[in-house]
Length: 195
Image 1 (cartoon, rainbow, N blue to C red):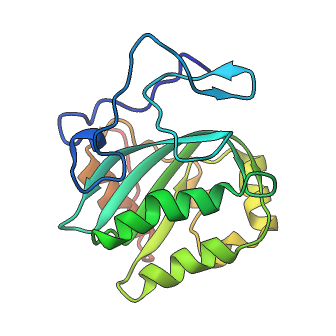
Image 2: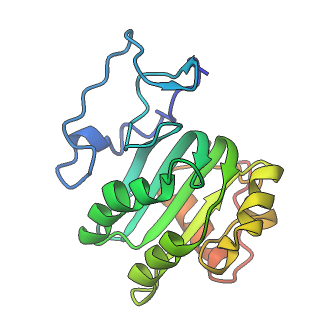
């Protein structure tokens, strides 16, 4: 796991630690000293801690004018034991909502497990953004992660599953990824394609 870095090809567009509006503003990352772990496994030092013992994130793009953010995750999403959604909502999402972010793309291809509890924080998050036309979309979950999300009834507040399960987002700019995902969420059929 220590070799899996957050996506860095968009750094020319955005760096969360340099963005005064970001909840990660001022964070310093050591490229060689590994401190964060998921269970007994060290993870790359570029991932950001937000209070969870088993889940880390990276805000890889935010556009305050358009009102969206793209976050990448690694680890085990555990609401049951660690209440990860509470930490994410309070320490990352709430500050972004205050800055006008109301559309969220969560890239979860490196989330190995999801242990749901209830949907209260997801409902709160959705309620906080829906009047502004906001939405939450989870991309590229493993099948068993998607199944657990369904079992927790997150589909009433979060977009995920088949259409969002194999999106090839990496070759594209953040704006193109956002436009394609927005079209999919809002009922269109536009999908990201290889060039």
